[in-house]
Length: 299
Ligand code: AMP
Ligand code: FE
Ligand code: FE
Ligand code: ZN
Image 1 (cartoon, protein in one colour):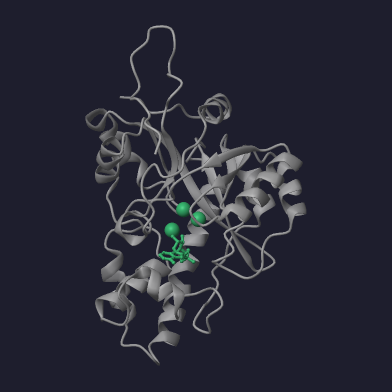
Image 2: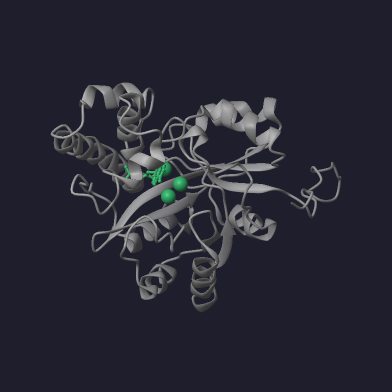
């Protein structure tokens, strides 16, 4: 691995040429296992200069993360990962630096979180036929999470000894193609991009070619429609993209003039993904800071 020196103080430049930016991670406010405070301290240990906190459908972790900036010395890029669906195909849209008080967007996220609860209850009802699991156990596993997801159902199954870890539960009954799978309401991706821009945010598509997760993929044209209403970038370097998928994602970026990002999508102990395993180019962060409604939170 290449060695990246830490940021040095310079009176003329805000950043050095070697900023390490991991712009897509999750905390225990959604399906990560680290609190925002733990996340920022691990980001410092991983030698990151900037970390993006992008919990699913919520900004509830921002406040704690902001408080952890000074002690960790790591800058915070405030974000969120919005659940979207196009003709039943699930898709994730990252929003950076949007105004969290913009109601049309926060209402859509609330609706997604609420239907995630009923959806988890429905999935547990189906699973309970074959697995020893109750919804109360899922809630217990979710702890302080504001956004409930399949990872919390996985944790309940793991606690019961049905599977060794989340990944095994996802390879089995929690997979998108499983008979136990139930959808929740999610925004249309083109509407989501428009809402993010209206909220002053900068929209970036997460892992668009992560084909392990579901058989059907979003057609390229949809990214063109998203670009027409303000899509800024697309994740290329991501663990769920093999070399072929990275090439496809890069082609989408070139075709629709989108910035190319990379990220770990770290979920703590919930996934093997390691902080800093993929990074966002510094020039992309600069554009996000120019276009976003909020500043970077710096130590
Ligand atoms: P949901 O949003 O409830 O449909 O659940 C999807 C979430 O599950 C994603 O955000 C991932 O973080 C997580 N996930 C998907 N596949 C896996 C896996 N193989 N192992 C662990 N977590 C996974
Ligand atoms: Fe997740
Ligand atoms: Fe995602
Ligand atoms: Zn994610």
